[in-house]
Length: 89
Image (cartoon, rainbow, N blue to C red; front, top):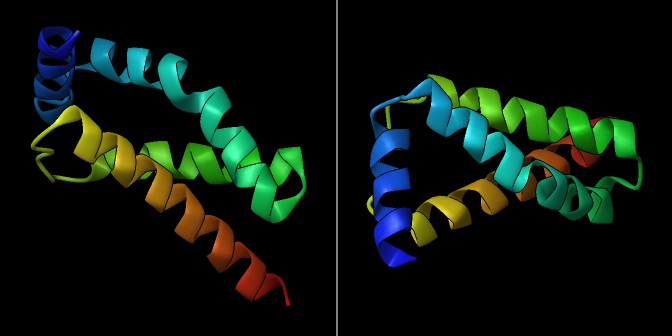
């Protein structure tokens, strides 16, 4: 599995569209549930996660490992959720 994850993260770093499609399928639902813990609304959580995916696509960063990338996704969703709540109040 580590070899597959290494290949996957290399493809993400190379901005391969097929890898981003796989990324979306692999993480979208998990990230929405994670975001809902903060924002309490599915539609808002989905918007937050979609914005994070767009940011990942547009970002020029290189992710060293699959785990680092996964952590980046979850932290980005957490921060976006907190920002949403901050601006809502």
